[in-house]
Length: 174
Length: 161
Image 1 (cartoon, rainbow over the protein chains, first blue to last red):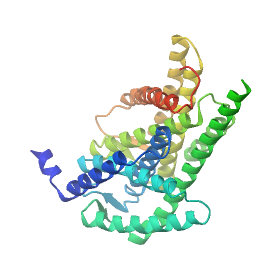
Image 2 (cartoon, each protein chain N blue to C red):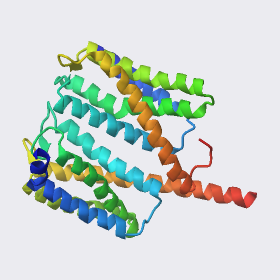
Image 3 (cartoon, rainbow over the protein chains, first blue to last red):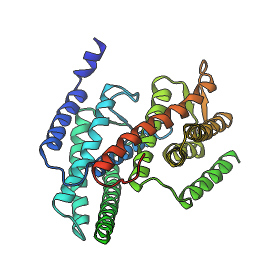
Image 4 (cartoon, chains in turn red, orange):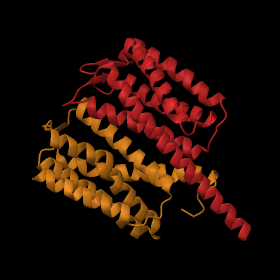
């Protein structure tokens, strides 16, 4: 009964809706890069997000709570499933639109603005509860985090291309 | 003083980790690092927030050391341990190299409890933490084996497990 009461709260319903949308997106769209890189980017996204939540979201900082309670509950488990998909969507479009050079700066700026809009909606649905946090702090955080995504993804892709080229050269020699 | 000594130990471990050649593929290292950081973080959050069995210190240098340990040093120890386990042949040797990272994690945990960087609540015996490291290493090893299947399918891994 208590689990059902938790599941029908605003933040849970909103998170479930977001999960449905993002997982349908991931299922429908073709994979632009290998599954091994997708897994790494998803884990990286989740790790960054939870690392921040469990550092500046807890004592002695306590800038905000994820969901209403500071404790780990069902809604937190749902955010665990959402963060990787957000990271995947970011890298999907980064790869799909072949973003490079100066476009990277514009892409990160646009995605940070979209992330701010999404965060405002999340705050409205009690996915985040601000204690000492301000929305404009989030913009700086998104700029940093998304830059790290781009760095991680470009390095992984570069390594993948290098490995494939080395293998091709080895086969040609044989 | 304890914080400075711990920080110095962490830096030496990091230097050792980045200078020693490893057999694991770069993707495996990153995967293992991320899994360990995530699992360890989630576990600590659960026992400190929900169960209130661990009480982290609120002093800023202690917080920094704890976060640095959770996000960087624990993954380094586990990755290094797994690299050793996968490098050797023979069950006994693998078992010995399994114990090494578990002992290292237990040792650091003891230091944290001794210097009150993390305190244990009443009713929670510190020795219960001894199996945490073993479970973490074992869980990460299983995840790594599963990830290796994905790497092999993507044509990135050519060595036998």
